Length: 124
Image 1 (tube, rainbow, N blue to C red):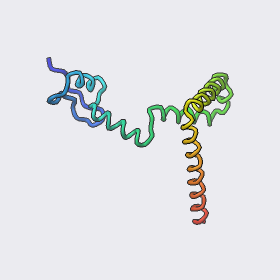
Image 2: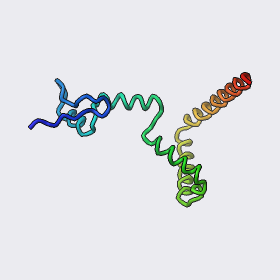
Image 3: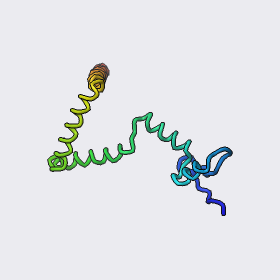
Image 4: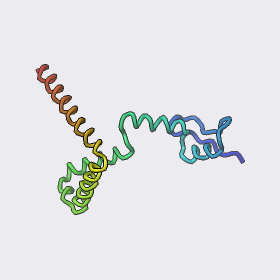
């Protein structure tokens, strides 16, 4: 009995064993529903544009906090913020280089914001 040919969810071509390809690799591709090469390319594109799998979820939750600001005052949210603050402090101590990068990034963003402000004022 031959395995069922399954199309790749990303490129649409059927997932088949190619010459020299390990059997486990084909089984993985069939199980995941996409070629390994297509998965790598997909991941690279997402990383290039700084998109993580949780971005959509984070955007929806952020919208909920805008619509329902009282969610910020819940016990679980206060607990979460407290834990995040402690973790950030510990990270700053363990990795001082990250703090320097963060400061440099803020300065750069401020400069870009000022430049955009000047460009907008020039147009007016």
